[in-house]
Structures are given as C-alpha cells and as structure tokens.
Amino acid sequence: MESEDEFDMQDAAESAEDDFYSGGDDGFDTDDADDYEFIDNDSDDSDDLVSHRHQQNYTVLSEADIHRRQDDDVARISTVLSISKVSGSILLRYYNWSVSKVHDEWFADEGKVRKAVGLLELPVVPFPDGREMTCGICFETYPCDRLHAAACGHPFCNTCWAGYISTAINDGPGCLMLRCPDPSCAAAVGQDMITALASGEDKDKYTRYFIRSYIEDNRKTKWCPAPGCDYAVDFIVGSGSYDVTCRCSYSFCWNCTEEAHRPVDCGTVAKWILKNSAESENMNWILANSKPCPKCKRPIEKNQGCMHITCTPPCKFEFCWLCLGAWSEHGERTGGFYACNRYETAKQEGVYDESEKRREMAKNSLERYTHYYERWATNQSSRQKALADLQQMQTVHLEKLSDNQCQPESQLKFITEAWLQIVECRRVLKWTYSYGYYIPEHEHAKRQFFEYLQGEAESGLERLHQCAEKELQVYLNAEGPSKDFNEFRTKLAGLTSVTRNYFENLVRALENGLSDVDAHGGTSRTGSSKSLLGVGGSSSRGRGGKGKGSTSRSSGGPSRASIDDSGHWSCEHCTFANIKPATICAMCQQRR
Image (cartoon, rainbow, N blue to C red; front, side, top):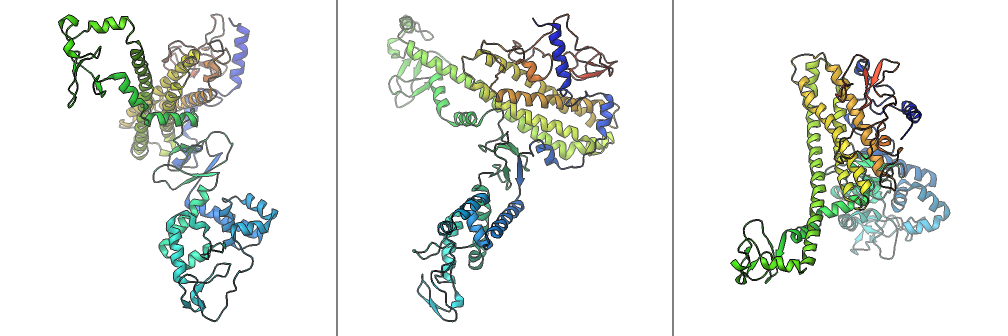
C-alpha cells in the first residue's frame, strides 16, 4: 500500500513532464481552440504531414537529387586527386561511391589503385595520327579518325566499339566496369567513350545503370520498395528508428525494406511473413481437420453427415470415420451410423492416444495462428480503408467543409493530421498481433499485460476514429457555419495528441520487450501501465480484462478531479483539463 506522500511526489513529477493527453504543457480548452485556429502553417505540402517526425535521420532523394550528389562526389574526387571527372567516376564506382574510401586507398598506394581500377597513366600502345591502322577485332583497315582507343591505346573501329559496348550494356550493370576489348588489357572504358560511341537507346540504359549504382552500391541509400516509385532514401545509419516515409507516402523499414513494422523487429517480421506464405499451416489444417483413407492414404475432410465414409474413385473404400475400420464390419451392434463402440473401447485402452494428441495439437496451433492472423489482416484492411478515406478527405471533403464552416483549408489541417494518425495507429496495431503471436507460452504475465495494453490501444483508436469519421459528418452536412465547430476542433486535436502519445509509448514498451513486467509474474509500480500511459491512473478496459498494469489511489489520496490554479479540473479517467463549469469531461465523456 503506497503512502499519500508517495502519490504527492509522483504527481509533482508528472506535472513537470509534458502533459500526455494534451500533447503540450497546457491542456486543450476553449481559449486554446481560438489560438489553434490562427496557427500559421507556412508549408502546405502534405508530404510534411506524413514524414515531419522522421526527417531528422533520413532524406528522400529524387532522380535530380541523385544526379546532383553524383556530380558533387565526382567533382570532389577530381579536384582532390587532380584527375579527370571520367576517371573520378570510375574510381567512385569501383569503391561503391565511398569518397572517404577512395581517399584512403589512393593516398595509401596510388599505383595499386590505378592497376586495380584500370586507370593507366601512359598508353600501352602509342596511337599514331595521320595514317591507317588495323582494327583489333574485325582486322579491317581504317583511317585513324574512324578508330578509337581507351587509355591503353589499343585501336578498334567505331563499329566494333559500338557492338562491344552494346553487348556489355545489354548484359546488365556490369557494363559500368567495362574494360578494353583486348584480352590482355585491363584498361577501364570511361563514360566519355560510351557517350561518343553507343546508340541513343544504349546510352539511356547506361545512364540508368549509372544512377542505380549510386543507390544500390551505397550502404547508406536504398530505393523505396513501393511499386512504381522512383525515389530513394539516404539514411543516417545508427540514428535510431529504421521507419522511413517516402514522398510517395509509403512507409517502410530501411533495414529490411518491408513495410514499416514497429514495434516488431525485422527478424520477427521475416518469420511472420514466411509463416503466412509457407505450406506449414496448410499441413496443420490437413492434420487437424482430416483423416487419411485407410486404403489409399489420401486425406479426407468430414464436415457433416454420419460416420460412414466412402473414399473417392478409384479407391471407393468404405470405412468408419472414428475407428477407420472397414464399414463392412460395422452395423447396429457397433453403434449404428452415428457412433462406434469399437472406437470408444479402443480409445479407453489408449490405442488412439498418439494420433489424437497430434491432431489436437495441430488443431490448437491452427486455431491460435488463425486468431492472430485474422486480426492482423483485419487491421491491414482497416488501414487501407483509412488511407482511402484520407484521400477522399483531402480531395473532396476539406473543400466542402471549408465552404460550410467559412474557414480556409489551411485551418483544417487538424483533420488531415487526425486521419494520418489513424492510418499510422492501424499499422502499429496490425503488427502488435504478430508480436503477440511470438510471446513465449510460459510468460503468462507478459502476455496478460500485453493484451491489456493492446486492448487500451484499440479502445483509444476507436474513439479517435469515431470522432474523425462520424462526428465530422455532422459538420460536412451542415448548411452553414456551426457554433460548436471550435469545440469539435479542440476535441479532435486533443484525441489525436492522446492517441499519438499512447501509441508512441506503446511502441517503445514493446520494443523494450515489456521489461516493466517483473520476474514474479506481475508489474512493478514504476513499470506499470502508468509508465506507459504517462498518467497517474488507467481504465480497466481492454481485452486482457484483468487490468494488470492499472493503478488505483487510496481513498485518502489527492483527487485527480481537483481544480488547479488556472481554474481547470483534471479528469480522473484521462487527465484532460476541463473548464471549471463543465461537469462532463469533453474528452472521454466521463462525469466529474
């Protein structure tokens, strides 16, 4: 039992932190609503709404950005090493576009680098001017102006060069490290010769390979995996979360390039995806819901009818479903069509124990997997629906609402932010089911606490979804400005902040492996749902139903509904700061 002094100390610590439910130092009230209305938002770019929280540790690159970065790196190498830009691009390509690696290797042993890369200081064969020479491939004689050579000086005619380059380009990205056609020569063929001798189509292919190499060979950059997306992401390795959001609005994990999956780690995601696509669950279903024909061994499912089973042609064997014996040995004396005395007797003697045990285990495993998979898939569907609703909101409803309420669309960003939060929460909630599936069976306390937190998350998300969808509809259908629209703004913005903070804390807790659950099968005082929620108390709702992480105050402790110095009272259920005259919480609708 905790003392009142301890609660007072905890309340003092809570007041020093940012208010969890208001998303700032002050709670939302009617005055805040007016201030919120006139917040100046300089950027109307919807991409900022999607990714503004993650821009610190990654940068989204367009094709023009990639070109610019390539040119800058090549120019830097060319200037520092006093070589041509063509040679600089060959060096960078060889060292996977690592400028620092090029510097280290070049200044350590320039001759070794030149030999490995194929950058020759002097030609192997002098290339004479003013007379005819023989092509080293077709052995035809050509004037010197119709022959070309790499830095080595081996002469080949333009036609042979074009064929050689075209074949290399059509073979794939290996053309970026093209060498002289002479078998004994390792001189590099630069981009200048490709530009001069290749066809237009081949030059376009080479340019695409060149751009792709900058992303695919660089360990700090990756392409966005969304279908049809041409953006890349430059990530600061070791900077924290791997979740990134591309300008195409697709969120993915930079580490494994699967869709964003916090709070689940990449290994768990790989196992879950493999399980969803593997044949193991099909075999589990067959084992749990069918029996093999005693004669031909083909699996048979019985979904209705009596115990008399006839296998399909060409087998046509007739047998009893329960004991798998020939039906010719069955009749009224063995129990008729809907029972089998032989089976019951054999079962009591333990004859079927092993097979029944295997079938029961398979059935339980299948039911457990189905439970988690169905909810995982349902949240995925809900997320897709929310994305479609967000798109409709941005393209149709915001303009209509702006006309109805006589407010500029720039002041309705709180609605878009609410829908973006719903989409993100659906994603998190979806992956919590794969997290729950892999919680070890023996960790009962952790599972119970997890299910409680998951239930609270679902409950909070449903409140936000209800407000953003159903309650907003009233103002969309209104024929003129509504007097209580600012109150709706306050409520929706507050719910968005509440839900965002809760889910961010939930993700951190799950990523830490629910370390708040102690070794004795419970939760410590400081590691209860209080630390996750960021508030002094928690409701007892949720699928866990046990309130494992909830806390309560003694009757003599300070009341959460007490009125503070600013004339507001804090709700006991959600800590929302309500105005003094109100008797019902504007956030959770609970009575004071």
